[in-house]
Image (tube, rainbow, N blue to C red; front, side):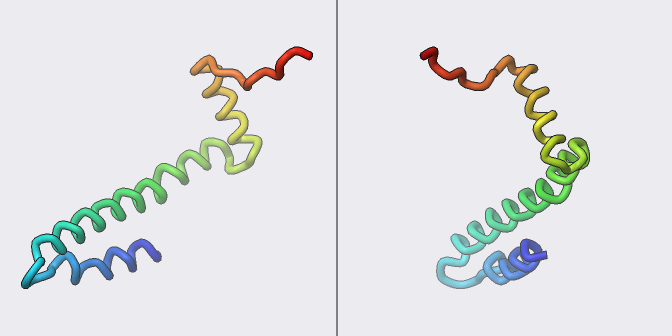
Length: 81
């Protein structure tokens, strides 16, 4: 909700007129677009990934272990004493 309030608050910047209006419009366009994409990412992809892992730390650990096996990465080993 805060991100949408921020996006709506940028509309006057996006519709800027007068001296420096084009620069303000560009800044408003870039900021609004970035906020829309980041909000969509947070709303859809983060929630989908947490539902895949059942939202628990054990689920995240299971996904991490599966990803490490797929990428063939291990934990750093301790040096031999």
